[in-house]
Image (cartoon, rainbow, N blue to C red; front, side, top):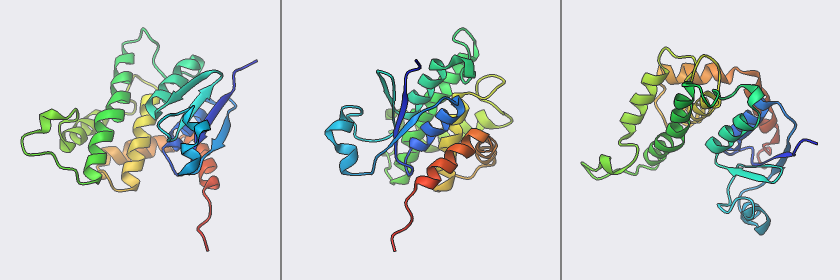
Length: 209
């Protein structure tokens, strides 16, 4: 009997990325919705994710948190879905590179910029991302003229990158550079993304009053 996949999420959270990956996988999964505040800080949920945030994924007895890790885990757990280069493929290097680039330098640079956290002059070498401009320029160069980041087909690295860009463009935390817009829009046209978005959009409570 297949092990149960369960997504712990909130429709207005980064859990939308994990749901997109689950829809790409195409296997049955259960959803546990958690409101912000006490439900995410309950003892029951903290036993799953001590950070008290979503998303989290359980697969049988396995627990995975953090979107990039969830994407990578699912790609490896279901290799027949071809969402990651084979372990021995040279494309595996680019796959890892861009997953971790988006999870670390990109996420940190965008967050700090959004909250106007400025480094002291001359101290850019003290942070992993260097500077916001360096991160954006590096990513733009990688995406220019490129359909996929790791090989000749869609992988979890493309999904995670497109999802991050989509959030950034929507909330205006990144510049609407043509390469960013094109990459995000192209992959947002995938049926799995459309299904995932429809599911989460339907779960958002209507405005009060």
